[in-house]
Length: 312
Length: 192
Image (tube, rainbow over the protein chains, first blue to last red):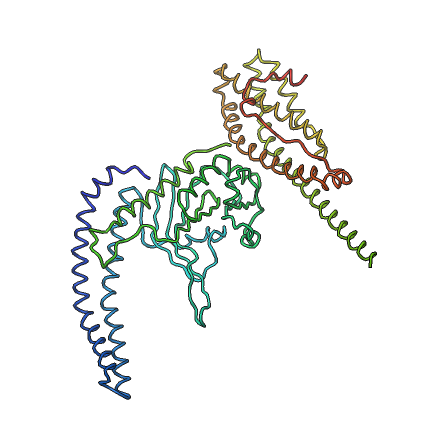
């Protein structure tokens, strides 16, 4: 983690607590306004449904009442949730920017186009039909430039004669500058046991067999250059990578590409969690979880010692 | 009926034997490829030597034997050798090891000569020397990995039988005791 000018607790008291207090007041105002607008419409829809069930209207009139009731319920739902969702998005972006700024990182809710390209080229992403990216963070940690984003990838499946989407990746995609010079591409894929031949079909490069037994159990390495792969994956680096895999407690894959180390951590959860607009944001523990996720950025660089060059 | 069974078994044995043969040759070629990688990396390092020796000769009159020994070793490492012959490969690797240790010794001795130590040629050469160190270690690991795979195939039955017919022999490992490589080396003794 970058060295903040002041401790996080002090920063929290001085800057975040008042901001969250203001946010809570604003959330209540927005919630009240949304309830004022949405509740009568929802009540109207509910009343229409009850009226229809009790047989107050039959025939065409009954259908009309039923349709009108559902339309009112839908409209009430939109009136209730839209302002809260908008508030939540704006507040979260402002809160995230403040916290990341404290650690010396730049934050943007939107991810620059092309961020995924390198990950796709290295086959670090499972095949998917729908994607969403958010929370782009960049900066330097221990003097190592990095950029990361959160990604959600889903694959379309046919289920009960209709299209559905299965989650195939939810987690962090990170790019760190790597301290060694290299020209080829080396890819670390998760070991898939007896399905390795099938699961890694199409991964560019030749299989690289390495000496570290534990590393070999966890990963399959492919590279365009056998010597370069070993130059990058020194015994010390393999040990550190296994330690990182233990630390993140999630499937992790990586690639050396250009002058960067790319990491895909499929934690199957959202990182940099945001407060719920339906709860008092002062009582939520999202800030603690948020800071723990930020600490992971530094832990990656520290565990892998990305600020030093290892020769063997 | 009996003949067809015999033919099927014979066919299977021949197919298996051919498969093993292909595997052996593939692995031997991987060893050659890995040996080539080592040579490429070693050449980067040893190409530094003539300039350093020429410069060092001006300042290190007392180390004449060391410098001459290094030049001779370099010539030995650069000499052509049969990459298929394990004995010649072993001799080539031994000479490479000796030259590597000799160069480390040269840099260590150069510490006693401030003018030489500060010369740009030497500082640049030392930086390059250290930079390629990682590449050499990587090439060595690639080579040893290829040799392990080949030697396993050659030494385990029925590979031992097929290897004898195909004249494929186990290859030597390229091992370097890192600590030993940094100890002072008597180049003349090595040359002797």
